[in-house]
View (cartoon, each protein chain N blue to C red):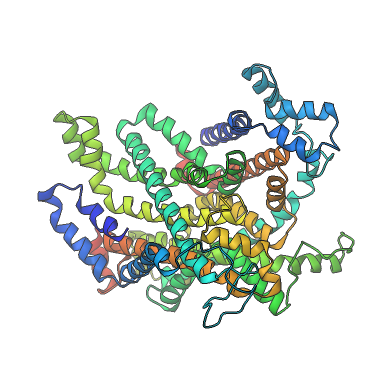
Length: 325
Length: 311
């Protein structure tokens, strides 16, 4: 319990740091973001909205601490201002309409990559020098060396443009009515294949090698020898004795990996024009939509922190040493 | 680059005690197939980067031919939708990409060393505080942070480097801290403390040389990170769009619709170059691991004796 509380405190501090960063960035950067935005959308913005924006981005005359308190208040009450590029939709509305797609893409690819990667790692470590151990790691490391977005471009070109097997843009076909129909779900699935495939391909190598190396260390522990001496079946030793004890670092990197997947998903979404938060973040940057940018950043950060907290809770279940401390 | 890597572990160590294992370390690296392949690839790219102005004199982004030409004898890698020579762009691109990658790598590793050593040596409050900051930076999702920093800072090469160091140092600090901590608890460090050595000397002369291989691994990982993250940032159009680099080449390829018009030769070369460099560095990294960590070495002896040797 104390462990959980400590971690919770840590995540709160991390979240506070990202809010503060968000607060300070526009205030200490050269130039005036509001004027830049104003120049782009002056015909559509009302004076009072410009005033609100100035307050949000700190281009007003109040003392800094007063602005800071107002900013914190706004964040925790969910007032993140109005999007400029999709004027006059509130930022929260823009984000909530898109976060689902990112969760779908990121979640699917993270789970597939982690499960398959760890299994491959287990097998590779169990049969040192076997086919999986000698052939796969170099191949996966090589694939993993490619930038996410470049593999995405390659996949889009090869399977989308040249072969025409999969759709190349968006999350579902235009004009299709979203709903829980087989047609729609199938369509979403088809649109998901290429983006998810690229993320899985790039990240699977890290999982496999991480698992392999921990498991090699575990394999030389005495209790493995003991299990062998007792004459247990190899499959049981591999999964219940060796893999189970080598799992912990993988669980930790699951939380860490999340940040990378969010980043990778961001770039992949851009390539495939997949309507998630990453694609929206780029649009916001290109449209100088500072409120949306800040809102997206905070949302992504909060999601990553929350997921890490869940991983911590899981960790307590898995590792009794944490509980006894 | 390569000489720096080879020199680093030998440089700071005490001459008497440590010379022998280091010679075998260098020897192990040179005879290791992975390391050899990695170093040759890196040398080729460094040579290309240095020779770029000689091989392709003039501004690589000037328009020299018809648009979207397929690769032929005159333009080995074809031309872009604007009519620029892709090969010239790719070769010149290595300059910015390698420069930024190496700068980011060295800077982040340096910060990581300082933070890691200070954490491990002083412990207590300083360790708590530094670990907290490190972990916060590790947890904040890197790419969104990159994007938001780059969006607010004035565009330019300096911004790219700064932003990449800000997001990249924490990983190396964490690895180096845990290694430094385990060395901090060794007897010879306690002996150095008792004999009244200054803190700086203990950190940099006693602890640091003993983690040379980890420092090197971290450095390589940071360089890989730097090159990849720069490319990602530039691909999003957040770098300095006027410079020629691999990331910018890919940005323009995407912008000019190279994918949809089927001009694969525009986007393939820069991506392959990034991958080759990252792969080469990763190979060297694995080789360092293998040479310094006996457990990961190729198995030559039966399992039982290997286990006995490891203990």
